[in-house]
Length: 162
Image (tube, rainbow, N blue to C red; front, side, top):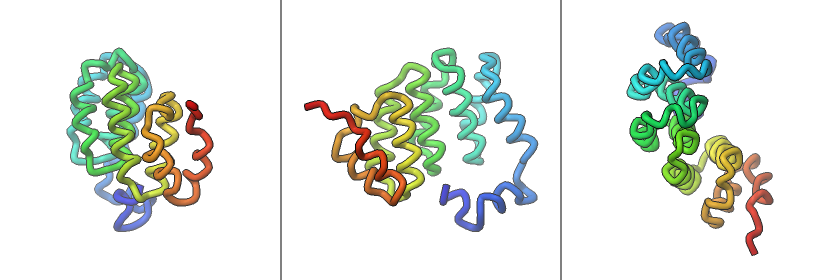
């Protein structure tokens, strides 16, 4: 996302000498392995100063689903994160762990405030994957679909409840 690469490309961000590539790669593997024993580690990285680590902590909770319900408070805290990718990942994780209203509200907040088409597109895709599209207020959904070129293709996905 744009905030991560404000000072250069994402490539530059990842290839910076201070970027802990191996540590983040290990975290991504841990997040994706589904082992419930790693939940404490995932909750700990959700407090990291690095957005990419907070992101993987949330993704790990999504993968664990209801087995990560104990992380709900940590995930709710990420709904106020400075990085949109982290907020979106936290919203999706909240739905997965059994807190669909909190996740929905997180997506509504993102969709209602973003001016970035990639953020809007990702949040719209997560809403669709979580089957929440029809729960987003129609004006918020329509406005998000008008953010840039890509999201406009999703405008027809809003269910007609008439």
